[in-house]
Length: 308
Image (cartoon, helix red, strand yellow):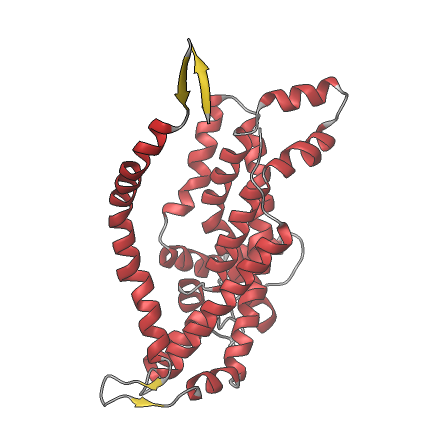
């Protein structure tokens, strides 16, 4: 495109076009370390896992090609199918609860003084700095049948003591509580960042039009924070379906495999089986399941860029 400036014809974008190749080289040079690490620790292991899933692979003997036999074993194994369903149920317990609590906390922090907001942010982030193993031990003590804090609290309301981690019906919900607690800090701070990114002028205009708090929340806040919710939902589902340390330390998958989540089942097979073909195929199928769930969440929530 050309323009006439002071009687001279100037080509717009010419300088940009000349700089584009150099900018591309600089961009790739800056991305190179991350791409190398991604290739070494993510892409190559995925390719290698896909290849080994077709073999009866072992540390102690030569590998034997078995085709799709490992996948057939995994897909016909009721324990694996049940563990995936249990993982999805666990994520459904944890993620919506986390999102609601994180949004409520972010709304609270956004409306208080700066000094109090700093105290609240530090307080909610403390569990994130605690090791999952340490948190699991803390909740084992909380769930103790005799002298545990949980049974003491419900005893105040006349409810008899519960065997939280030894009851098939209670073990999974009991495990969801520390999962919510551990992930709430990061979710709340990300939610707060998204909330503070919304221009105050939107709320001022809505107030001038007579909109109340509910109308401002559902017409301004939630639509503009859609991508924040989308990210937290996908990251939360993927992380909680793959939860490993909590079921390992709290219950070791019991009672009666009621807390046996997919990663713990895969680890158990890898530890106990002579060959690793089952574990590799199961991990690869779990990757496909999680990728499909993430794609469906993207599709149904119809992510779009927020516009000021």
